[in-house]
Length: 417
Image 1 (cartoon, rainbow, N blue to C red):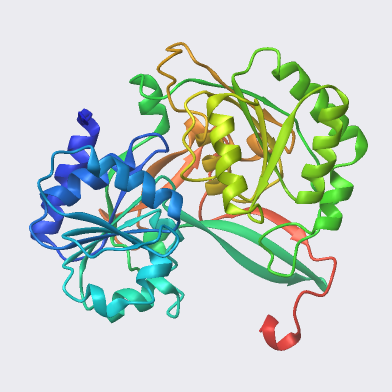
Image 2 (image 1 turned 90 degrees about the vertical axis):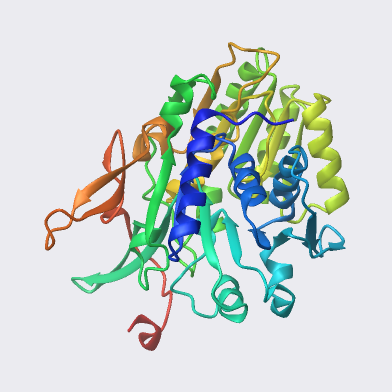
C-alpha cells in the first residue's frame, strides 16, 4: 500500500483542482526521487473519466503502472505498449507514446492525458509524436510532470568570419507556441534532502578544459574522435584508480561514459586493477540488459558502465556512487545522472551519495541540490512573473551556457539561413 507524503498530496490536490476548473496544459515539477509515479497514480484514480498516462519508455511505463496497482483504486487499469506486449484500453491506461501514436482512434474518448517526463515533448515540433497525437484525439485536458521543465536550445552565429555554436536553456513554458502555460506545483531536491526523503550528496569535481572537443553535425553532443582524444590514457588511468578506491566502500557504482569505445577502454583498465564491471548501452540486447540490471540490483557486481541509458526510470536504492565520465552541455541530463543515486536506502538510513566528476560538469553547472526554479518580473508587464532556473553558479536559462568554435563545416548555406 502507498501512503502519500504531504507534498505529494498537495501536488495531487493542485492538479485535480486545475483539471476541474481550467483547460490549459500545466506542469507539476517534482525532483528526481520525489515520487512522480505515486503522484500520477493519485491523480489518475480520482478522475471521473478515461485517463491516458503517456511515458517515453517501457521502463517508466512499468514503474508508473506498478505504483497505481499498489493503490486500492477500484478502477480498471491497463497497459498499452508493444514493448510490454499488452494492448489494453481501460479507464486508466498507461501507454508508451510510440505505441499510442500509432493508434489515436482508440483514445478519442479520453478526456484526460497525463504526460510523464513532459520536457521531452517539444511544442515547436508540429510533426512530433506528442503534437500529432494530441491533435488526433481532440482536445483532452493535459497535465505534465517532470523534474526538469527546461530544454536545451541551439543557436549558431558568425563573428569575424568564424562560425560559432552556443547552447542555452529555455523553460518549456516559455517556448513558442507556449503549449505549457504554467508550473502549478514544485518540489525541489534541496527540500527533499532537508525533509529526509533523499540522501545528502558529496562531490569531487575536476576543472576540465573542453577546448579540444568538437561538435557533432547535430550540435547536441561531441564527436567520438574528439572524445577519444579527450579521454586519453592518463585521464582513463586516473578514472580507473579512483574507481578502485570507490570499490573499497561503495555498495553500487554507476559510471556514465560518452561512447562505447571509451567504455570499452575504461573496462579494460578496471579489469587490469582487479575491478569487475559490465557495460550496458542502447545497443545491448533486451534480455542481456535486463539480466545485468537484475544482477546489479542484487549485488552480483558493483560497477555498471553505461552509455546513453539509465538517465530515467532506473531506481536502485543501494546505488551510492556516481562517476561522471562524459562532458555534457545539458543541465537536464546532468541532473538526471546524479538523480539516479539520491534515493534513500532503507537498509542504510545514513546513506551518502558520492559524485565523482571527471568531466568538469559540476564546476560548470553547480551542485544538483542548488538547481532551483525561480521567478523574474516581465520587463514589459509589471506584476507579471515568468519562470526561470538558477543554481549556485548563477542563472542558467536565457543566456549562453557554452560557446564552441565550429571547426568543421556542419551545414550548407541554405541550412545555415
